Length: 357
Image 1 (cartoon, rainbow, N blue to C red):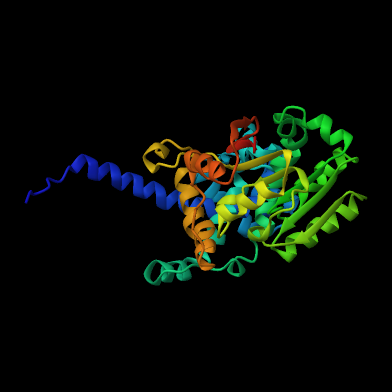
Image 2: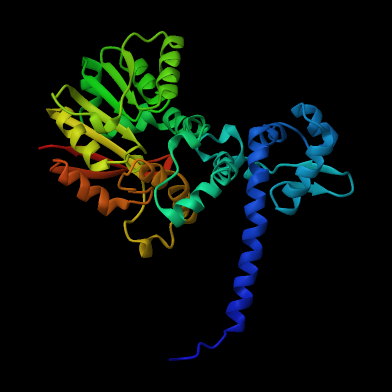
């Protein structure tokens, strides 16, 4: 038995780190408020202004805005001139916290802090007793996921993602059958249906709310080649009826991901292509030490993706299943040819282009 010697310098460094975690963990809540109230968007359009001027421009109460600005100033997000009592959002900061930044808007992700905190108690019960927290415990998830995904779809789907698959644009223009499994609110399906009117698009999702949102958007866009169906992805199977199938950050959420992948393979025609878009990571945690959003992703997994799967007695694959596991599972599902691609504008995901032969 050995006695471990306390490294005081290491202890002090870790205390500083913990202080930072406490500060920035709470700052994330305030950034979420800034996003949801459009305070960042408002400030990006203003010259340096007082708290009252900012509140008036945003249509909010000054006392709350002033206290929020205190967090933003001490968090080094907003700049403050003590002589004029003016606040300003630097252009360089606006590029990461405003809606105008598109996929670069990281402020929107801070909403997950408060969202996941609401299920902390049942998560702790799952730690102790097993099982998981059901999807029904996350009433805003569909809305929040749509906000994240739709920005990426608008910026990259038609211009960069679809052309990843050689010859696909020509086939879509001629007219083929396409499905998006786990389509969420259906925005990807509707964007493709609008861009390629000769092709036929079907969105599947087990959420009635998501299917309804997709149908409403399709109607608003005047689309006649996009349909949606409430369907458990695990029940997908033959006969082969699609030429192109997509999943966008959906496989790692599934209770039975292997079954879903096999169903996708069975639903593809012999010359069909499957595009699996999912979180870019390594399957070994030791290789994720430098992952830019590693702690965030493992937290999302623990408190949503993994636990929702386990609530259905599923496999609990988790958000960070990683590239090696993805390639292994795609091969087991019957995909003999898989290439791993990346898309500019989406630093979060790998793009697996898979064929059965």
